[in-house]
Image (cartoon, rainbow, N blue to C red; front, top):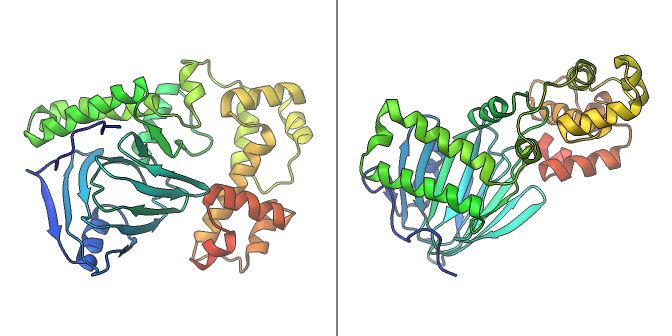
Length: 328
């Protein structure tokens, strides 16, 4: 199958660096993305890296080619989303428990709160679209009129042959071409409109955990009783809450509570509570100043009474065991 986009070097008028030194390449790439490990499978240890980049403000466009097969291990991206579009070749992308072979017809969109590990094969130049996490999540909140209750998570693989993705890819091609020609996208008065199209288009073009909410269109505000239960799970997930207690404390029936949570969060009340507890545990494990000294102590404090099930749920979400996060 032919590539979705022409195979040529992009953004040549916006060069960031060219290097044949592995350590230099790692350090320069880290400055614009995040710290990571970089190794090459080339027998001579050689690379021929090219990185062109333009930062538009809320979106940064990149062309990156390592020139050889490389292993890239950034861990969690945390503060940004990265859409990775191969122009040729393929790459193995592992994020949490998911794994895909990314090609010119299957882009990758890693979850920023799960561990990322990649192998880019030789002859695998990619377009990388860097979007600040808060920018993307705030745009989703504006569209839906609701605060996010769990992090925005895209499916890892983005099928570029679908009609929606092809339409979005046309926007990408237009923006890259315009930036290469120092066109209107660089005008501050027009740039934001280009960025809005790209950001909003991504939310509609690629499946994520809030897609059903977008497909249903704008909804009425969350009912007060449901909002109260949701907020209780967010503010005090360490409490020994049960579905009966949640229903009683908010003055709704268990059935109405379950229906409300499903409609407005996409999760059952207990699953929503568990996800918020996992978030708090993860923050605690990552906090070097935490007063807790062990994984078990943290898990028990945040309401997990069965360590085996807790560890399995944690690994399913973050791609590693809680003990690995604590050591890292």
